[in-house]
Image (cartoon, rainbow, N blue to C red):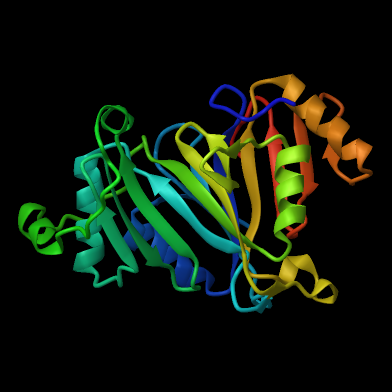
Length: 283
């Protein structure tokens, strides 16, 4: 089976259904630093100012409700910042606006913090140096010294730079084995050696699963569930889409593929729609 790698798939964007549409726009634009690229109908599309850079889509869902249970389907999503200096400037911005930090940690190879948006979606922002990771011991983490960050980095409300990308994506699932089978056996995501519920999604990125008490009410309709709606992956190899289509046909799972075999969409066992697109362009 074709597995995903840097050459075959790249996580381009995710879409969230939200109820507090205006408040969420303000949060991601003014606090996190996204550029609001455009608004279309009930969508707000965020990214940076580089070409083909849509990273986050908010869908206005005023009648939406949270899935029944104790957790959302989206455990967290993350942004990778390639510059260590920019990472600390973004963290300084969080401190200026008094945004609660759910977690901070760093070592000599990486730095990360986690926040929660106005609708309870968890966002992790991190910097990671792969060269240092390979050359040194980067296992020991410590909390980030916030006092040092305040002294070293003066507040300056800035925008996310063009080299920001989506990083790790983690989901809460009701049926772990069904989800694992779908992502691995049908979509071709390879499990990582150190964790059977962690999959390789992109270079130095992970797609993780964990069991949570979630009971999706099918009668309510998927479009009314707040939280993650779909994820888009850019695929460069046509054979990947062909193999996914073969797997889905084998198990009689409904999906859509256009005649030119450039787009394939399918719903996973958790009601999340996955878009696989060759020759990815702006939505």
